[in-house]
Length: 261
Image (cartoon, rainbow, N blue to C red; front, side, top):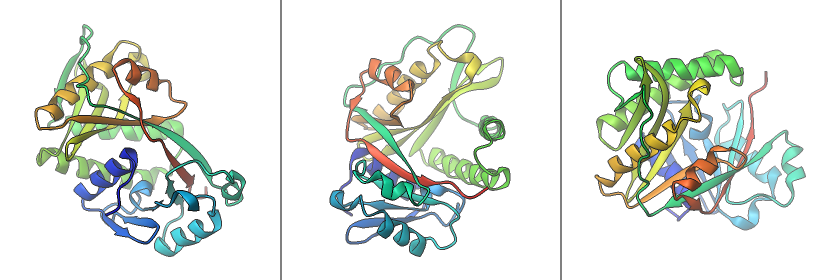
């Protein structure tokens, strides 16, 4: 398969680890995740030709042909289009994501008092699923029924990665309740972080920084030599990652239209 920037390359590697199929076409990839049809960024199209990103009509048509059952549009791009209006005409939003990487082991900052940290086991996974459902119910971004199916599919995929020691999820707990967590997945010699989250009332205490270091050491112990994290370009968490030694790499762009309703 053709080479991709580290953000997309690690996305694809994780998807393939969990059974997704990646079809290599001349200037794009089609990704299918049959086990989780509600996973929008597991059932998408990735443009690989830098010079073709402005042809919104073509790529929307190609997406619909590849995923005729999809009620959304999800197309990955290697750069921000110049002709952004062509995408907006399809009701599609363009989001730039920062890709940060480092080849220096991110060190774990001290764990603040009152918390314990461990790798997910047993009912920790249940707490993680409950937090995701509660967050979606609060934000009202996705249909609750389809989101529940998606979240359960993601949970199963993550448990499988953890059982095979390809990935690991770590959480910070206060009085037994999960309040911060993240995942990390081995993609060859590169480790890719997943879904760094901290409950609002526990932010600003260094929990994410501590977990980033714990996960980095887990990956280093298994041969990883590079660490990659992806975050929204406007996400203030990017400052935290930079303080830990992460530096900008090739960014990525998501062209996305939510399902109606």
